[in-house]
Image: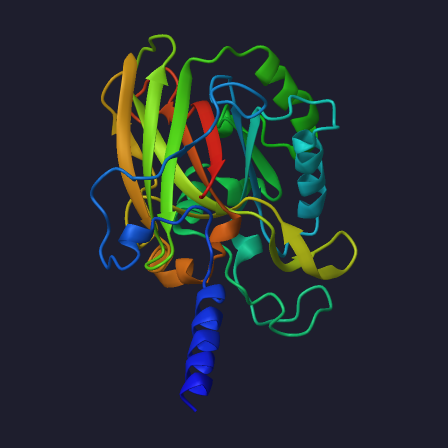
Length: 318
């Protein structure tokens, strides 16, 4: 009987261990922490300095502003996918794309949409920071889908037309030299679901004006219903969905944090709570599909290029 009890104990232990939400390279010594860490991560996973995704090259930020009830939005997604494809003939690896669900086309509804059953589009895929940017950049007034390319010319609707992405994006990349490098080191453990991230900002060449660092969580391969040009899909695969910003558990900081210098290297250490983040919605995100996005932009006090993004970076949560 004792041997039988030992056997079942071993089986239960194995089930408990294998049933955990496994993340690559967890920080085991911190597995029982119940508060946010305040020291740099012990395990570092840095994006490479060189190569296709290296942080030592210029990268552009493409924001696909859309909604699950927008019938033309899948067309914009198709264009974005072609830009990100390694066989598309475009500057593969130099584009950081985010899908931002926002505005009137993304408001959860229990009504019947596009012939679907009531409640099909009741899911909430918005984010606090995305909603704030929707108002700031006037996306509702412009209409969906819309695209922000480095947030250039948003005030006069320049670069918002998604059908021009195939021409605008490669042209900007080919004619822009890197001025800032963003090197991201991150660490993660599963209980609690908290990551600590170190952002190293290096000014490759001195810049004038004031700048800020925005840091975000996005999730890839999120499946939820989407209205199509004809009908709808219950299992549409969405890529790099904006989930929330670093900063606090109620939506994060919309304007990021000020960068105190425009030369040399500056480091910022930040944390994200995947249990309490975005008013608790973070508890339902799949950390294995999540990425960290960071970008440097001209802050609101920058009279030369307010809101204009000068460099973006993205690495996988590890």
